[in-house]
Length: 112
Image (cartoon, rainbow, N blue to C red; front, side):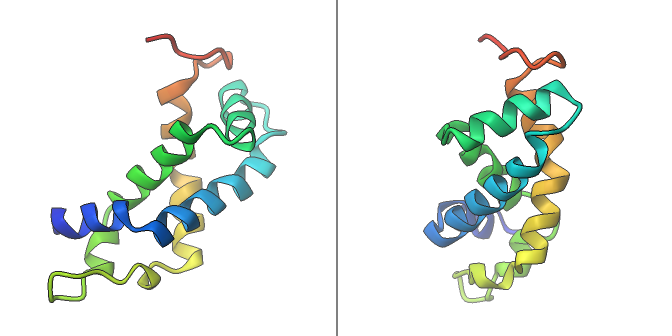
């Protein structure tokens, strides 16, 4: 894994947009979930709260194997090497992690 490629991916405007789109698409599903923290996260994403959306980009770009996948070997990255399927899987897998960063189990915001 290259921290440089991870950082470049996190800063890539197209990867940010794609991660945001995947999070919004999944929020449409999780807004009706039985887990209150997931519902609260979904609602905040659908409201466009950028801190939660940016969390997906940060965590997605640091997920195992992703920075290696985009590394072109010349100090650059190609974010398009992360497929939509990859992003969907990453977003689904990282949804619980983002939910616990911002919301208690009962769906109330974590203060701090």
